Length: 577
Image (cartoon, rainbow, N blue to C red; front, side, top):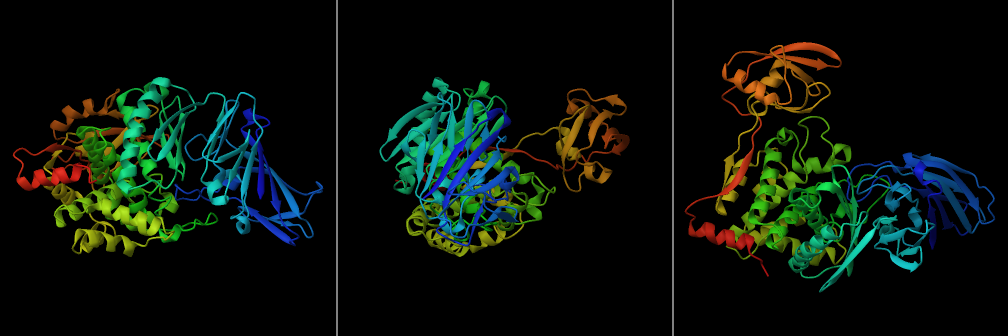
C-alpha cells in the first residue's frame, strides 16, 4: 500500500503539505514522479513546477540522497530500506475544474496534478489521510475508510478522483434506478440545488437508458460556484468537477442552461472516455503525451449528445437545443483554421495549444467540429438505414464491445461501425470532414433540411461582417481579437491586439459599430487611429460591401414540410428505446 498524508499548515500561502510512504523492499534505487498531464485535458500540464522543498527519509527518518532526473522524476538511493518517506509542498493557487487549490475555506485537490506516484507500483492500493480544520467536510467519490481517510484501488482510480474539502460545502442527494447521485456545492444555494436535482434526474436517467446500463453505482458532481464569470468542467470515472459563475446569475436561465449543458456533457463522459477509450489511451500513460486523432469521438460525440440528450429528456426545449447547435455552426464558420488543419490533426495537436486560440487560423476545435461531425454522421446513418439505426448504435456497440471488454478502439473501428449502421459506406464523410480541410456548411445545411430546418443569416456588426475584424473592450478603445483572412482589415494592415482609439479623428465612444454604420454607407476610405505597442498610428480602410467575412446563422423550421422531413424529425428527436 502507498499512503499519503495531506494538510495545509498555512492555507493563506496556498501551499499543500504532502508526505508519502512508499514500500521499496530493499531496492537499490527507486523513482517517484508527478504526472505531466491530466486525463480530460489533452495538453502538457507540467505540474512539477508547483513542487517546493522535496525531501526523502528512510523509516527511521534519516535523510536519503536523491536527484532529479527529468522535469517530473526523482531518483532515490534506498539500498536495504523497506520503506521511504517523500515530503514536499505543492503550490495550489489555481481555481478551476482541473487544478488544485488551498485557502482558509477549502482544500481542493486533483490528485493527478499534486500527488507523486511510482510507475512500478501503480496497481497497489493507495490511501489518503487528511488533517483538516474541525469545521471542514470532505466530498469525493473515493471509498471512505476512516473519519478523514480514503482508499483507491490503484493509482488510476486515485488520479481520477478529485477531493473537495471545505467549511461551506452543502451536499444534496437523489437516487436513480441504477445510480445514487450527490451534488456537492461549495456555496450552498438550496433553490439552485432543488432545480438541479429535478433536471439532473431527467437527463441522467435518459443517458443511462441511452447506453442500456450504467458502469458505476454512484456519481458525484463537485461544484465550484464562483463569484466571477467562469465556465469549466472536467470528467472523472465516478465524479465530475464543474467550476462556474458568477453566483449572482446562477438562477437565471442563461447561466443555468450552461450548468445543464456542461453537467450532461461530463456525465456522458462516464461512458465515452472513461470506459470507451481510444487504443492510444488504454491505459493512460501519465509521463508523456497520449497522442490520438480521435478527439472527434471522445469530445465531439460527447458535446453533441451533451446538448441533444437535454432536449430528448425534456430538460431543454427545441429552441434551447437549436440555439446550442447554431452556436457550434457559427463557431465553425468563423474559425478559418478549418482550411488549414484537419479535425483529425487538430486532435493530435491539442497537446500543443488545444485549449487556447494559439496561432490565428491554425486549427479547429475537437468540441465544435467534432459535435458537427457527430451530427452529420447521425443524420446520414439514420437516413441511409431508413430509421433503423443512428449514431446511438455506434456508441452502444463501442460501450458493449470495447468499453466493457477493456479494449481500445481505433479510427478504423469507428469508421467501420458507422458504415455498418449506415448500411452503406460513408467513408467520404470521414475523408472530407475528419481527414480533409473543408467547410462543413453545405453538408450541415443538407442535414438540417432533411429534418425540416433551414439556416437563416443573422445580421452582425458592420465592423465584423464588412470590415472583417472582431473586438473587445480595451484600455482606451476597442482591442482587436480576430481578423478574417483577405478582409479589408487584414489587407489594410490591422493587427490583432491593435487598440482602435479614434475613427476619422473622433473618439469612438462605447459602441464602435454606431460610429461605423454611417461612414460605411458613404463608401469612402475611413481613417482608424490605433495604439500598437504603445505607439499611435493611422490606417485607412475601405469596407467591402459585397462580401461578408464573419457570418452568423440561426436555425428555423421550414414551412410545408414533406413527409420525409416529418418522418426524419420524429426519428431524430424521439427516444429510440
